Image (cartoon, rainbow, N blue to C red; front, side, top):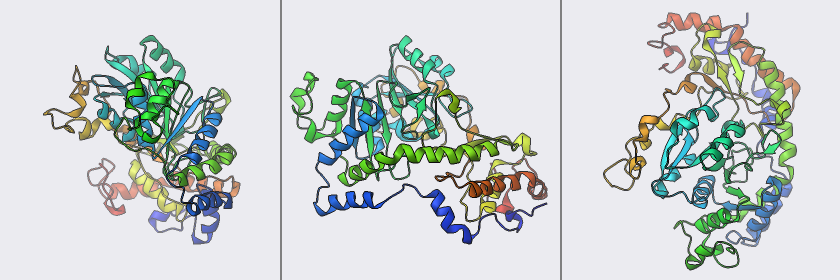
Amino acid sequence: MKKLAIMGGEPVFTQADRERLNAARQWPIITREDEAAALEVIRTNNFSNTDITQAFEREFAAWNGTKHAVAYCNGTMALAAAMFGIGLGKGDEIICTTKTYWASAVPASIFGATVVFCNVDEMISMDPKDLERIISPKTKAIMVVHYIGYPCDMDPIMAIAKKYNLKVIEDVSHAQGGLYKGKKLGTFGDVAAMSLMSTKSFAAGEMGMVVTDNTKVYERALAYGHYERNNGTYITESKELEPYFHIALGGVKGRVNQLCAAIGRVQLKYYDERCAEIRKAMNYFYDQLEQLPGLKPIRVDESTGSNMAGFYAPAARYYPEELDGLPVKLFAKAVSEEMGWGGNCYDGVNYSLHRHNYFKTFDFNHCGSPTRLENAQRDVRRLDPALDDVEQKYCVSMPWIKKFDQELIDRYVTVFRNVIENRDQLVQKEEAEGGLDGTQAGRWYGFTNQ
C-alpha cells in the first residue's frame, strides 16, 4: 500500500522533475523565429496596420480550407462578427449548448437575439437529439461548440439545420485544426469563429479569427469591426453595405494587434506537427488511464478520421460509483497532491450557462425585462435543459501533455493509479469527518463538498 501524498506521503513528481515537466508542458512553443517576427513589428512600429494581418488571414484560410478568413482582436469579437455575418437580428433565436464559455452565447444579446440552450451528451458535446425540442419558427441559427476539442456530431446537426433552414456557426476556439470524419472543423457551417488567445491550442497572443466560404458573410463580418477595411477595396459583392462604408458597423474596433498576427504566422507553420505530437502523448496517456476504474477520458475515436486537434483543456468523466462513492472534489484534491510538481487536477468544467443570472434576470438595456426575453416571443427559460451541473460532479481535468515523453507519461498514470488503488485511505478519513453524503465531508482537506 502506498501512503498518498494528501495523507502525508511523497508525491510522484518533485522539484527535481521541474525542468523535465516544463519541457513536456510548454505551450505555446516560442522559438527565435517567433521572436524575430515580433521584434520586426516592434522595431518598425507596425502594430496597427493590416499588412501582416492580411497575410496571416490568407495563410490561415488556405490552411483551414476555406475561401475567406478575417482576424479580430479576440475570439469574443470574432464570434460576434460571425453572428452579424449571418444576419442575426432582433427577435431571432440562436441555439447554443449550455456547457461552454459565455462568449459562445452572450454576444447574441447585442443584436436583440435570444439564446436557447441545448443539452449535452456524455462527452459534453452538443446533443443532436435535443435540437428539435427547442426549434421554433423564430430559430435563426445553431451555435455549435467543439468543446474541449471534441468534435460535435456534425452529420445529424447539419441534417437538422438543413431540414429547418437554419444557419450554423461553429465555435472552434477549443479545436483549431481538428477533424470530423476527415473534414476540418470550421468548414461545415455557414461560418466559423475561434479564439487564438495565449492559452488555446492555437496560441497567437490575444486574437480571434472568422473563416467562411460565403463571401457575403465574410464581407458583413469584416465590416462589423474593421472600419479601415469597410470600403470598396475590400467589400465588393455586398452592395447593400456601400452606403455605410468607412464606419465599423458594429460600433466597435476589432482590428488585431499585428504583434499577434506576426506570431500567428510563425505558429501556423508548425501547428499541425506540434498537435500531432500532443495527440501521440495524450492518446498514449489515455490508453493507460482507460484501464483504471472510475475514469473515462473524453476523446474521439481517431479510426473514424476524427481527431482532437491539440487536446485543449483535456478532461475525463468521473464515475464515483466505481470508486466507493468517493466525491469528485476529494478525488481531484488527492490527485493534485499526488502530482506534486506535476500540476493540478480540478473537478468540473464550465458551469451551465442557463443557470447564470445573466440568462435569467439581467436587463442590459434597462427595458424592464430580462435581456434574454426582451425580443422573444416565448419564455425560452422554460426550455432550459433539466440538468443541474452534473458535469461539475462527474468530470475532472487531465494533465495537458505537449511532448511524448513515455517515462514521464507513465508517471502521470501512476499518480491516478495511486489515488484509485489507495482510495480506502480517503474514504475512511472522509467517513470519519462526517461521511460521504457531503454534509460534513471535506473539512480536513480544505473545502466542503456541496
